[in-house]
Amino acid sequence: MKTKDGQKYAAYVQTKNKTKFLIKQYQSETYKVMAAQVRSNPKKFLSYINGKTKVKSGIPNLVMRILPDESKDTTTSTYEQERFYQTSFRVCASVFTLEPQNYVISSNL
Image 1 (cartoon, rainbow, N blue to C red):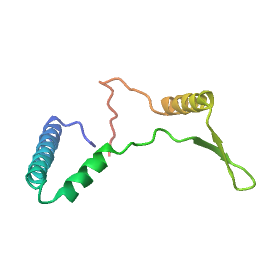
Image 2 (cartoon, rainbow, N blue to C red):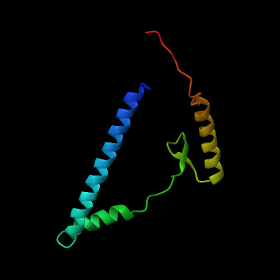
Image 3 (cartoon, rainbow, N blue to C red):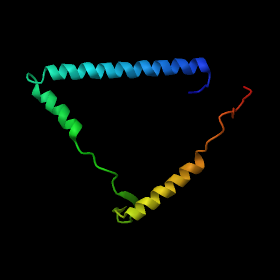
């Protein structure tokens, strides 16, 4: 949010909650319709089940660099991946810092 005005934030939270409620309501109605049509439309139900039971792969091997012969140098070592993640985390942590809650930037525009 661009502002920390209490009224605007309250309106934002109210809209967010209403949206979440409507999404859950729509999903619930969709599931009820699908359950009622299981015998007449099994393809739709099985498609839904297959989508929910797919195994998603974990974190893929990291591409560390592209070699001169256009092949990729990947790492499968857990140690190398951990080292890469730690370095990335340190860089991000140095850029994004936490400021005190009472810290306000005032601009005279």
